[in-house]
Amino acid sequence: MAEPRFLPATELSGAFYGEAVRPLLGGRPHAAALLGWGSDVMGFDTERSTDHGWGPRLLIFVAPGEVAEIERTLTELLDEFRGWPVRYGWDDLPPQHHVTVTDLAGWLVEHLGVDATQELRIADWLMTPQQQLLGVVGGAVYNDSSGELGRARERLAWYPDQVWRWLLACQWRRLAREEPFVQRTAEVGDELGSAVVAARLVRDVMRLALLLERRYAPCSKWLGSAFARLDHADGLDRHLLAAVQGSDREAALGRAYVAVARRHNAAGLTEPVEPTLRPFHTRPAHVLDADRFALRSPETYRRLVGNFGH
Image (cartoon, rainbow, N blue to C red; front, side, top):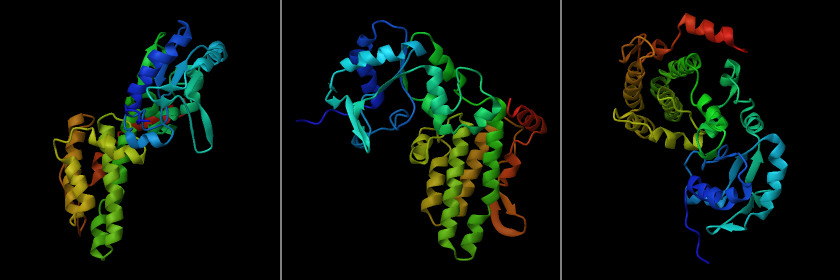
C-alpha cells in the first residue's frame, strides 16, 4: 500500500474537520481548531513528525452541557482519512481518535492554568510559559460560531505593555551578566567553556529578537526555526551562526549585539541608546554593556510590582 501523501497537520486537520467531523455536529454552535501541544500547531511539522503522535486531530469547543452528547456522535467517525488512521496511539497511549470535545474555559485552564476567556492578572502573564501561550495563539481555527475563541486568542496575542517591557529588561540583563565571559574563558585556554558561554548568549539574543518582534518563543527544539522566520536584513542570523561556528566568537557576538541594539532603538520603547561596543572596564573584553538597554523605568517597575497578583 502506498504511503499517504504528507500534508501539514493544519491542512490535514482542516480537511478532516470539514469533511468528517462537522457533518456529525448537526449544526450545533461550536468552535473547531488545532491548538495546544505539538510541532504541528506551530507549523513546524514535517514528514518526520508522522512517526509519532501525528495525524488528524481537533479540538471542538461547545457549551459544557453538550460535551457528552457530542462525544457520543464521534463514535461514527471513519477509521481512515486521506490514508491516515483516525485512531492512533503512541508510547503507552492506545489507539483512539483525537477529536477532543470540551468547553473553551475548561480547556484554557487545563492548558494555561488560567481561564483566558477573562482578563489575566499580571501574575498569570508572568507565570505562563511562552510555549503555552503560543499553543493558543498559534495553530489554526476552522470555525468559531460565537467568536469566543477569537476573543480569547486576541486577548493572549501579546503581553500587556508593562509586562513586555519587564521581559525585555530581564532579557537584556541576562546578556549583561555574561557578556565578558566569552573573552575571559578563551583567555585562560578554556575553549569548551568559551563555546558554552557563547552558545548561551546566542540563545539569549535569539529570544530577545523574538521579544522585540512581539513573537512568543517556542521550546528549544523550534527556537531556531521561529527565529529564522524573522527579517534578518541586518545579518543578525549570520552573526549568531558565526558565533557558534567560528573561532572569533567575541567579534561575531559583538556584531550581533550591535544589530539587536539597533532593533531595540527602532522599536521606540525607550530613548535611543548608543548601539556600540566598549571596553569592559580595564580588561580586554569588548561588550555592549547591555544593562544600558534594560528598561528600568521606575514608573514601569512600580506599576508592574504594584499590580502583581491583581
